[in-house]
Image (cartoon, protein in one colour):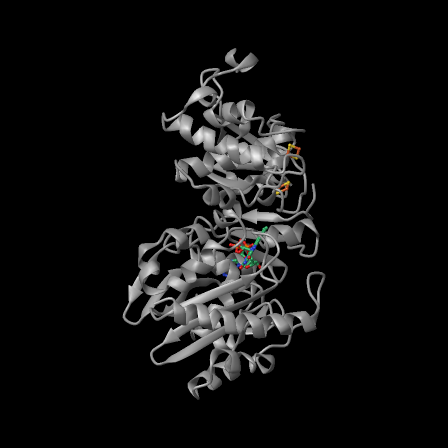
Length: 271
Length: 175
Ligand SMILES: Cc1cc2nc3c(=O)[nH]c(=O)nc-3n(C[C@H](O)[C@H](O)[C@H](O)COP(=O)(O)OP(=O)(O)OC[C@H]3O[C@@H](n4cnc5c(N)ncnc54)[C@H](O)[C@@H]3O)c2cc1C
Ligand code: FES
Ligand code: FES
């Protein structure tokens, strides 16, 4: 046995999941794919006293287009995103990110709802949600992504809140994502995403602060007609990286600027 | 506190009482007695523990046994059919796709999954498909060769030795 002991329950509906969270109290946790939670539990960095397994809840695995939005059920896995024809048409940047999340075993289990709820600044989709003004739908309310990611691994979710879907504005302009890492299956040491939206550009930063970040200063420079390189020079004010075992803060700042220029060039060169 | 878990392993149904915190890999090895699935890193990095759940590759050190209730689990022991090695197993043998062999069950499960999704992967797709598995011995070249040769054998395009049984592998394994 590696993790601390816990009770395990499998609700059949979102309502039941919510009441189980209330019943088991503050140390109960939802589990979806388990690909972020189980690694933490094995290290005993997380010791929930009860796990509420939401995998069997029906209705949370759909992807559907809804006017200007594409709504993705919380239990949609990375591998489902990779294979989904609607998403390839409406949100190709998400599909590109999904191709590079972890490895194929992780992608067969991990879910978009899990990424969003975990709130990891290195969770690629979180930066996309932020930069595209996505909405996070729960059993209680709709959150705007810009108000959702509060601090390191901290979101606006309350204890008995269950993410049911993520709604992204359909985004079909030019795009590119650069995920800088040493090994194929690693998380991003630093990541930069760019998406053309109408006549402007959206920029997002992965793992370059305690939370996902939007490249607001870079976006403003681009809107003012700056070149990719000149706009990228503004990246420093959009991020706030800390050093870790993989890279110093200074190196991450350097990466952010270089990768911003490169990613913008890549997106504008791809016709 | 234990609870019942009923699932199918390699085509056989079984039911056990387990603690919810029992990881699937420990359940397979210690409860079901199937020690072909290896544990190397315990940190979701190496893929040595790869098994299939409902036909999809997962790292069994990163799943609780209770999460697999009602599902179908395939381990390395379940790949050979009617005493004949699976083409991926045979190809690892023929192409010398292993040295110490510790990582091998995981690689074979990941490769079998890859070839089911994509029967004729390019070299790059093989590398990408096996990105979740680490080997400290082979340098990966013979592993890639083995997957290529299994792909050819499975699509009937085998030339030369790749598709044939050689050595003691020609003798059916006990099952
Ligand atoms: C080797 C490895 C490499 C990885 N690389 C990457 C990477 O490069 N990029 C990346 O983004 N991720 C990566 N991951 C993490 C992976 O994407 C996870 O799938 C994801 O972070 C969490 O999804 P999950 O479904 O597994 O969530 P879980 O692990 O089940 O849950 C994570 C957290 O979210 C909560 N939660 C889950 N679902 C909901 C819900 N619907 N409502 C409310 N709360 C919920 C849980 O209570 C828990 O706190 C990697 C993981 C591994 C093991
Ligand atoms: S033991 Fe499971 S990934 Fe290494
Ligand atoms: S053969 Fe030894 S670890 Fe792969």
